[in-house]
Length: 266
Image 1 (spheres, rainbow, N blue to C red):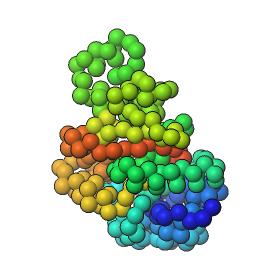
Image 2: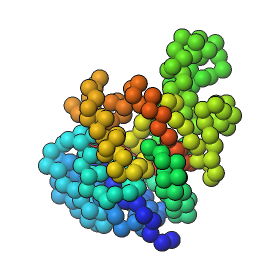
Image 3: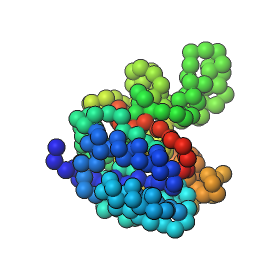
Image 4: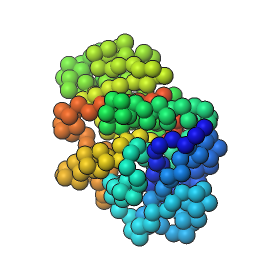
């Protein structure tokens, strides 16, 4: 398949066993062949990280100290070209074959522009890996039992915010939640940020929108708590602002499984 107009960016603070495993899967299943624009951001790097990046023909972005998830993704995106960028963490293994990978990436690029979406989620809906806290929360509020009914009555806003996660949880979510979820072609779905939180894992975004809207908002937001002492974007955007913006979010069938090996990195 010919090259596609997008860039790949991976954030890897240590966790080099996971990084190597992910890159092997990207080569095997054709992701790395879809573009020549490929980067790995290596905060607190060492020679092993640089060697891995060069071996798989990704341009290393070297940062001497750990700057956290927000800082790492910001620096990564700043170094990437304008246009669609696929942002990955080091422990996201590609589990689909070459044809599926190419088709979903191409469709994601097209739909991102067509719907002016804030992100396309590409974590697998069928084998997402662990943990997946959102699915657990959805089932607590939307199972067909008395306790779930009570939870929805007591916290309707919370219940509504979880509706988008039904796409990972149940068959035919567009029927159960027809007011909020639209099914598109090729098993893609469209939802509003009123019904689904921001996610960092395996996302396609427009580079400039990501920096000017998402990163900027996360930087300005006072965080409730930190990961390793740093902001992580997801925590900062889980807010009334996010819900009221009604950003469009696309969910693909998905390509990537969360598969952390040994040292976790983040």
